Amino acid sequence: MSTHDDLALEWADIDGEGLVRVFPLANFKSGFVMVAHIGLAAEKVDYFPEVLLSNEKLTVTIRPNDDGLDHRLAHAIDNVLADATQQNAEK
Image (cartoon, rainbow, N blue to C red; front, side, top):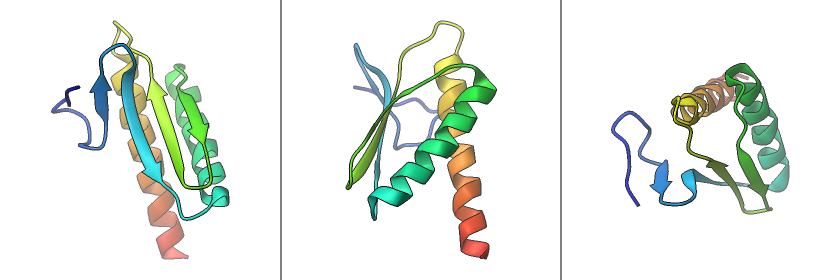
């Protein structure tokens, strides 16, 4: 397992899996909203992650891509979730 300097520390590069990040959740509803935001980011990048949602956590796995789409998607996910968090804080 290693991390990449260009990604947030929370992303781990797991051999044989790809980029993986686990988001702790307050409840299922907040995870469902996060999945919707992640889906929008994936559509923009045109590369799609695996998501596993439970009541306590959301696990996102992005398979490796030789063209760098895995890193682009990880950045897009970080950005869209940061924007959503900021918008919720402003309400």
